[in-house]
Length: 381
Image (cartoon, rainbow, N blue to C red; front, side, top):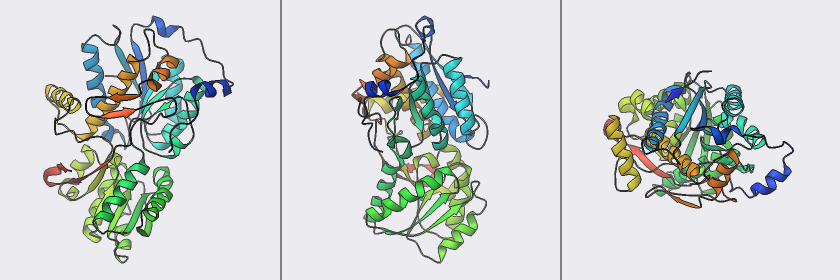
């Protein structure tokens, strides 16, 4: 890999969107001459969110390397250019401009974070360059139709509904919410309350958690007197570790959290304290090689000498979607033909895992399942 530091379905048709945009299409003549199919990605390669992305980035590259070993797409290799944004939305937008206007990428790919993705969505619509895949499930980003935004995983709303329904099935209806005191947590808090109430449960309390988790003990102790039957944790990054530990020590209620929150680096940091943690997953179980997709993935991970995990599998799946979009973009792909190619994928079966796209639907999956962390950090379905 070359690292360069340098809500509802879409209801608006792309043709209507193009007609309404005042910015003219740029003459991207360079794309047809380039030997490589260049796509661009802005993600944190530094800062607190860099470690959680390591497996995801490696998983992506496994898929791109494999297609390139087989001759690429139409005889052209796929090249991924990655720029570091340090998890800063301003830098995400700056990187997007660099990738589109200087690197002439066919598409942007795999932004991380709600605010970071929100920062680039107006720009991709203005430039008519698709953003394919984002490592955020924020429903707010899907409510406003954008003809150049395509997602590959379920929304956080889908994950919340699955969590609450799972809790209700075991008669745990008094639920507390711990939310990170940043855009991620604040945006999801009202959604969590709405889902809890609509599913017939009760939100007994909500408590903000410092971004780095420094007040985890105080938050857990404060909830203990309310005796919640479960905690939904809307927290990502390193702050997950101190809160889960504090919850175990001072509260003892089961913790449910999102797919984004628990990757391999967090599991390692938690150690035995991860046991019993419930995690909603927006990608299929990667260890059971019972489908062509999981068999291919396990084979590649074995060849690479890497342990199978959700992080790598999420990146691998998202890259596979991008590859299929490129295959469907014509002999001389452009950003515009790639966006059209994504819409024409219709029912995309990656080998036992199916996504669906159309001009009216740019959000390909609502798959969610609940997993529990068992002994030695293994996930149990």
